[in-house]
Image (cartoon, rainbow, N blue to C red; front, side, top):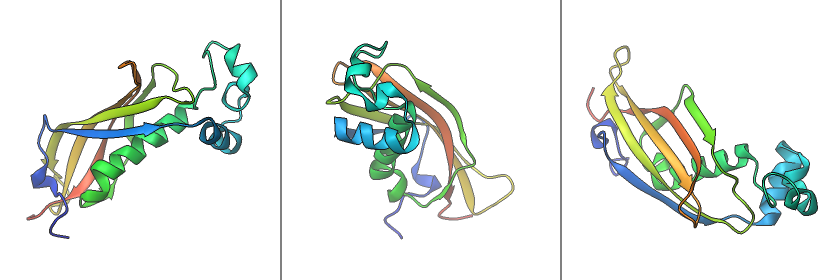
Length: 150
């Protein structure tokens, strides 16, 4: 556990790189069939004729992908204990089959908990961009992290 990041290892302004990740048509369709079966997520022909312009990942899917990339780069390498929720999620542009997404996780704050001396609160803003450098998904939230010393 000593190699995990604790509250004391986070500071406002830190940036963690996320990805890259290539999203396939098969995974877009599989996710959508189970969780968001709207036609533009599961039918390539319908998707081409939609406002999205092609087979597009559900916004929930892109949020899950962003979470996965945050876990790979930061959260599972931290003494993280979960979250009480996210403040904001935005789906700015579609993530289409074949897109390569990358992102960043910006730490916006890190402070000890007022009520639980062994814990801290880390706030962040994360986002995904496509290969065209256009932002696709934004997420603002917080996580609870153990303190090294209460």
